[in-house]
Structure formats: C-alpha cells, structure tokens
Length: 357
Ligand SMILES: Nc1ncnc2c1ncn2[C@@H]1O[C@H](COP(=O)(O)OP(=O)(O)OP(=O)(O)O)[C@@H](O)[C@H]1O
Ligand SMILES: [Mg+2]
Image (tube, rainbow, N blue to C red; front, side, top):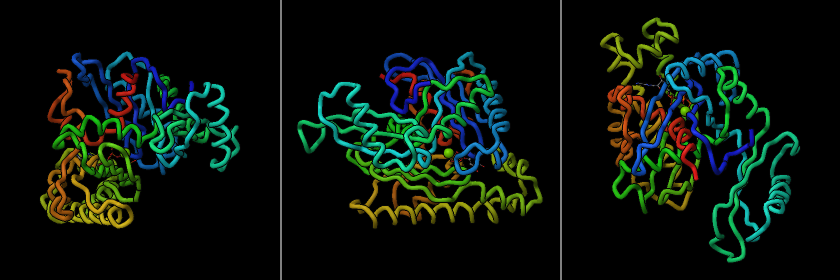
C-alpha cells in the first residue's frame, strides 16, 4: 500500500472506523446529480480492551469485529479506507517554492520531516499534499506534511487483513471528520459559511473537539470523557455485565429509575464538560464565541443531549447527521440510521474517499 493520507485517485471502497467501542463501516455510492447514496452501514461492538488509547491491543478481537461488521454490510467490496487517530500522526504545514519537480519536493519533505519528527525516518511513513498558494508569499505554496510510525499503520492493516479486507487508503480521523462535516454542515444556516462551529465528538472514552471557522479547522483538542462512564454506572447500579449494560443502554429495557438517577446526571455532566471545553477554546484563542455546536459520536444519540448542551452553553446545538442530503438504500432502516448517524462521522468521511479527485 502506498501511504496516502492525501491519495488523489481512489477505487470503490468502504469506510472502516476502528474505534474504542466498536468497528463502524459505511459504504457509499454515487447517487447521481452530485449526491451520495448510502448503501449500507454496520456497527460491530467490541469489549473495551480491544482498542486502548487508539492502539490495537487485541488483533484477534479487532479482526473479529471487522469481520462481523463486514458481514453485516453484505457487500462484495473488500477495499477499505481506514484512519489513524490524530495522536498517532504528526502533521505540519510548511512553505515550499512554487513549481518544484515531484522528486525535489520529496527530498525537501524528507528534510523538513527530519527536523520535527522525533523518530528515525526509517520508522515512519510520510505523505504530503500541496494545499495551495501561500497567502503571504507569491513564489511559494503551502504544503502539509503528515508522518506516522510504521507500526501504527501496520497494526490497522493487519486488523483489516485478518478479516479479508485490503487497506487502500490510510487517512487521519480528524480529516475524515472534517470531510463528513462538509455534508453535515448543510444542517446549519448558510451551510456554516462565515461562521464558527465547534464539532464535539463524544465517543466511548474520548471527547474530540474540532473547531472550524468558515469551514476550515482552526483548533483541535481531546479530553478524556465518554459514554463508557455511563456504561460503568449502569453496570454498578443494576448489577449487569459490561456487555449487558452496553446493550441495555442502546436498546432500552432498564428500570424506571435509570432515566432520572443515572442518565440525567450523566447528560448534565456531559453538558458541563462541553461548556468547559468551549470556555477553554474562547479564552485561549482569538475567537471569543462560537456560532454553533455540532454534537457527534455515540453519546450524541442520547435523547435530549442537544438541549442540555444548548442550555448550559447558550449556543445553538445540533446533532450531526452527515447523511442529511443523501439518498438512502431501501435496505437501511431510516429510524435506526438517524440514531446511529452521529457516531458514523468518521466512517462516512472515510467512505467519501472513494469520490476524491
Ligand atoms: N443509542 C445510544 N444511546 C446512548 N448511548 C449510545 C448510543 N449509541 C452509542 N452510545 C454510546 O456511545 C459510545 C460509543 O460512541 P462511538 O461509537 O462514537 O465511540 P468510539 O468512536 O468507539 O469511541 P472513541 O471515539 O472514544 O474511540 C458508547 O459509550 C455507547 O454506549
Ligand atoms: Mg470515535
């Protein structure tokens, strides 16, 4: 495989998000007239020791989850786009002279990378992409360089291969979220143009924050907070195993006291956590407000979470849905898709790589 965060042309493929609670897959096709169509998606749960801190801790369990998710898709496509967590990738914007030949650029990228990567270059894969003309100097272009340890990439390839898939694109989770955001932005007035939007992805263990101004990322941060805390509380309260608690949480069937005594306090602490993240953003950057908060990740599926966040932050809050303008295959249950959509941002962004130009 070519190491290609920034691959230019890609064949049909499926988006595969290997995250801490599950393996999530999305398959998109061309719906015509510039629209996408979602063909299928799948979520295969894993126990919490399978992926730890974004690293594959149990190849066997992750490989098994990839297999289960792929079977649920009922597709023939075996090519996959996979992503690395942002923490596994070092990226840097540099300026380079305009019009360099490919070989000269590669040499210069290596030289630049050598300066800021704390490992030997044989241990890393490097990729780069020209972003466009430099806003400050007319003879130069802005280039983004991304590098990751080879072993991080190999682990993810191995998990895909264990399930018979082939990784053809290796992306970065934050870029995939941003790609899906371009679709979800249609939920916002004026599609988010000229506005500041804070995407807050709350998964199982991490809260990933990405602020976009006029649809460009200006700030990225992570803090540990997630739905696993709620799962643990459900286990403790109702004497369930982790797996039982996880299923009950998603599908219902818990005692009446769950709503008021367990769920609501969690939702309140989530809202507080978002408010703190917002305050941290406004106090540590040139921005003094955000126009919208877009909630993503599995915790965004909790009913009423958007209202709780809006109330606490006094910022308009919506739940991300990258499928908002898509055609939807008749195989997909629309109601379930609406629940799962916010947790499928990364898988969706990866599936979009098939349409890259
Ligand atoms: N319908 C739902 N209702 C309540 N909670 C849900 C629902 N669906 C998922 N969750 C919770 O969301 C979390 C999983 O979200 P997500 O799939 O975004 O996490 P992840 O990407 O695996 O985690 P991370 O980003 O931390 O690696 C779990 O804690 C899960 O219990
Ligand atoms: Mg996630």
